[in-house]
Length: 289
View 1 (cartoon, rainbow, N blue to C red):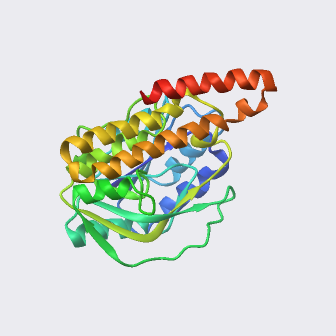
View 2 (cartoon, rainbow, N blue to C red):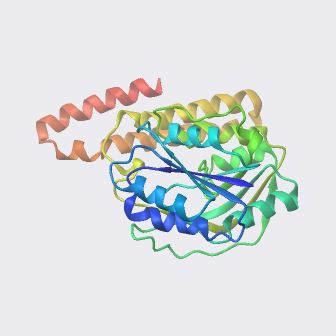
């Protein structure tokens, strides 16, 4: 059985599309764990509705503690031999989990990865090409590709994991970029990783999502997570240290421009904008020391 963990918060307009894409999977031995994280809209009722019409849907209602805590609650409740993650404002192809499970079984891998494509706010995907080639990676190769553009990055939602890879792994509470804090750990524990660029996951870029909101001091979590990965790589996989170091530099540059163009900053008048700019710069310098 595959346990699919879906944290739910503030996604009422998109939740039906997400859940229905999971209920329509060609692989049917699933449990779909909807972790309703104290959402202020009607997500709780939508979740409960699906639990009444399909026994594969389990709902966990909890106070709002953020994405990491919601995923941790899902992991604690999961009963499947395999673990998958889906964000509740996204949707997947009807054969995604059959495809990922076949990759694991056919290649004797511990993790399988598929391609993804970004969609607009209304869910319309960008143009994309599907690739059939499958790459078999060891842990070092997989972590190196995670840190580079053009592959699968650190997202958890386009992957399927053997459950035991998360036996001692949980998400850090109250952090942004929680995927990067975690993803290198199961990759390191895996004996083999199967990767295909075949697009099966549709990632919605929407106004109001966690990574497209106003300035937040937790922007610096990207730097901290990248530093943590770089330090890990330096100790265990020094051959790819250059890649990890560049990823750390990229995190610092990205964070700098995220702070510079944060929407509240742009709303200040000229005098207060200058003060706020220097405040952000001091925070940035402190974070990278």
